[in-house]
Image (cartoon, rainbow, N blue to C red):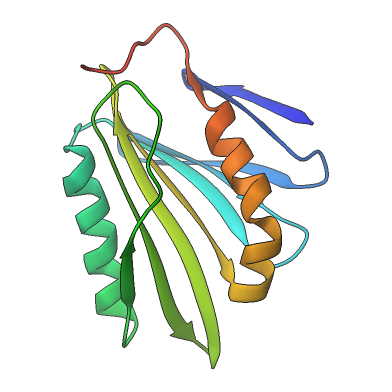
Length: 145
């Protein structure tokens, strides 16, 4: 496994996948491209919206971009701070695409994680995506209680 240790976060990801970094204002996104078309990303929102506000904003963006977005409750998270999670299915270029959107508030930022892919590829990679999310650590930061 490769390790990303950047911008106050640390996580592990498969070595063959490509990591990139993008800044937008004060926010930073760390983006991992798989060997296929699926991806995993972490955006650190320094304006610190609540976890639910961050997830709701992503849902609204998907609903604006795609017709017939189905939103489902996500799996229970085992974390210490305020969190929100959902799963989405939508159609893009005649393919069903699945995604997980989760957010967690920390003392420094709201961590927004999105991973998605075409439904068959997504199901194959879902355990790896979940493992990346589970390995996520915030350097020197304890989530808000």
